[in-house]
Image (cartoon, rainbow over all chains, first blue to last red; front, side, top):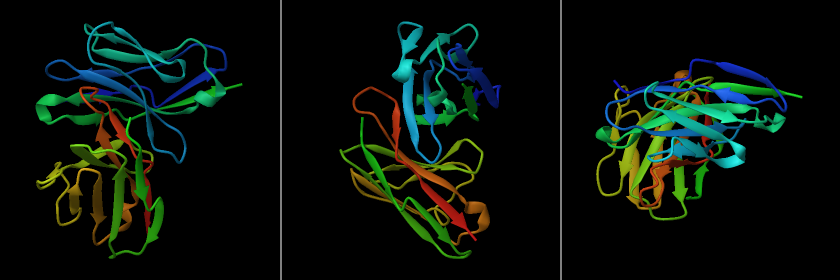
Length: 114
Length: 115
């Protein structure tokens, strides 16, 4: 079965420090991977994606993610965290052998303290 | 990216009643999706709604409980029927990006509370 795992329910980071939000996946075939962010009382916002090509992809708000095929991971990173980055982050994968459905991880709550 | 609106943004409903949620997109799209996000949880796909065909439901979701309409390429509705407190969730619609961009764009969601 296709799945996405985010092993940390919560990540706490001090402002200015680098942050990493972890994601691993299990799919058959080539994965199309995504990160979304959800701020309180708001919908999901697309951050970045990996489809093919360079393993390091850059997205909105200074975020980036590295695709690692051997470790089946797609960790989200930012060199210097901001308090305004505090939100709920979701990793997701599309499985085109199942009609393009988006499968989400369980989410990671990021808290950035001043 | 597409601009998506949903109505209502939130509602409080009584047990046993039904609520219809509307999703409007500012451009024509082939595939629309409806998701449920239960309190403190991730998103779960309810169904895929393609214009001109019956919606395709995921395991655990049935048409009698969540009827969906897709009358044209910019609009869809999801009805939550015979509601119970367990239906209290955020309901979100999404659409795929244009061309081969693959990502989905989400509406702001409808926060439903059933009492």
